[in-house]
Amino acid sequence: MSDIIRLLPDSVANQIAAGEVIQRPASVVKELVENAIDARATEVHVLVTDAGKTCVQVIDNGQGMSETDARLSFERHATSKIRQATDLFALRTMGFRGEALASIAAVAEVELKTRQQGDELGTRLIITGSRVESQEPVSCPLGSNFSVKNLFFNVPARRKFLKANSTELSNILAEFERIALVHPDVAFYLYSNDSELFNLPVSSLRQRILSVFGKKLNQQLLPVEVDTSLISIHGFVAKPEASRKKGCNQYFFVNGRYMRHPYFHKAVMEAYERLIPAGEQISYFLYFDVDPANIDVNIHPTKTEIKFENEQSIWQILAAAVKETLGRFNEVPTIDFDTEDRPDMMPAFGEQVTPIKPPEVHYNANYNPFATSSSSSVGRKATSSVPSLTDDLSSRAFDEPTTEGAFKPSAHLPELTMESITPDQSADEARLPLGEGQQGGGMLTAGDYLQFKGRYILTSVRSGLMLIDQHRAHIRVLFDRYMEQIRRGKGLSQGVLFPEIVQLPPSEAAMLDALHADFEAVGFELSSLGGGSYAIQGIPAGIEGLNPVELVRSMVTNALEKGNDVKEEVQEQLALTLARASAIVYGQVLNQQEMTTLVNDLFATLTPSYTPDGRPVLSTIREEEIDKLFNKV
Image (tube, rainbow, N blue to C red; front, side):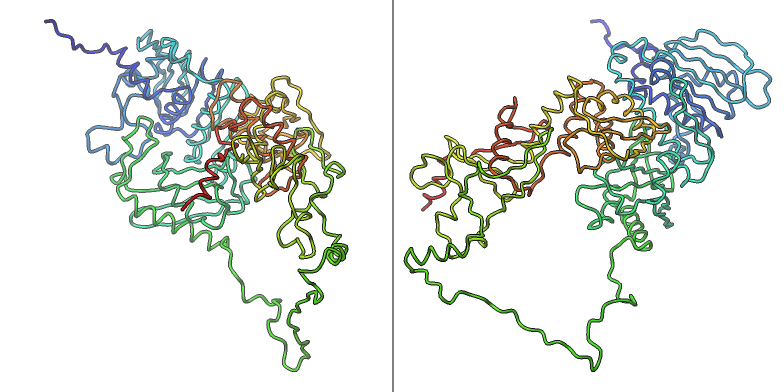
């Protein structure tokens, strides 16, 4: 029997390794920029074409490489940072495995120009699919110039699964921001299709954060500083009033390396407990400095997951540091008893004090519950100012639904509670609306609707009692309408008197530019002012009262989080965000006409039972289940 185990060719092994290290154009940018930082560059230029699919070019003024080093840098496991195994526990560089350049060269066409200090000529090296095409001397500036073209040209399956240009560019910007935030002592420049997106000169850490995410953030940041024998933490956290449901900038860095750490995230959020609404988040930029021997960065190919030796102790230090910052800058609510103009709690000595009278109880001494019908009619005349729900509903003036179906609460139908029914009212007047032809004295028939707790709509159906969530039902209705408007491109727009300005970081601005046509289809009128600023000159009809700036931010953030490249899915995300923001809220009182319209519109949709994101809209309690409640022994 012949042998079946064989060694893989280097080209195949490199492609397999590239699948772990190089996942998309953003991975190329990350690896090349980190190499530039390790080469002690003070200025890095990044140029991408077609979101990196056509070309990624990284130019730095670092120390460069010799002719021999330039050739060896593309071999697997070739690195200048590791000499022995113990070096893994003292790492302070960005890369160390020696797989990045080999992986890039395995799936792209790479050209390198590099020159060291003191050399008259540099080296030009061309590699295609792990095969060296040429190597020759060349005149070039000090440092390195990498040009990576046609990524995944020899792995068509991988290239086919790349996302749309807007999504890939957003990923590149995210990786670029992570590196720029941790190296304010390095100047960074980023260009996309010859358009400048970032121009970040050398600056302080706070100024670098503001240069990346906008100057508006300056009023929200509070400094954090703690130094212990175990760890040093510095950076910034946002004020509680700056909390948002989505779109917050949350960054952890350890020894100059970006990391994700849900456990430490909970430590930060615990410090904000009872200071921000439930479900909201805050921005933070926190930098850890810890002994490299106490962490392990070699647990994930992209090195974004890091294991700490003393996680629980660091958790406590981090939570205490954030709480101290919030307290030191008076962001924790307190009661000030030293205010000079506080109201006097006790009258001054000798001052005339008006005696406080106890509350009086008023009642009708002539009321007789056993009085005849004639006496009851007199009592009813006295309480005729209390509206009766048995009035003819058709004679009322109802609020009409808005163009987009967003109901406004009616001012003509007060909510009737047990406290509002006086003793002089008869049971007939206090009864809830009845359907025509009702039998058996029942209170609810098909076609009638009751609102329970300002949240659910109840109606009788053939099988029992149906409960409809009014907020989710309206989301279902509005979602279908917005999707229809997007497909037809005929969303109704309403101009605003004073345009509002929304400022977006480059990653979000790139996504908004890609979705500009979809925003217009919904009804938004946006004009670019440059530098990530947009003027909102028109909004979809029917969303009056909502904050258009936050709505645009939320829609862009949702699109970024979904990472969709299929236009249909992006459009669905926009429609869902708008429907959620425009739908009637819990606690809003609806009259019969409004409930009838909402229910009819709901059952006119294709999937009335669930919201677009899969949440149940309605539920039915069967008649047999109701009977069981009253037949228990």
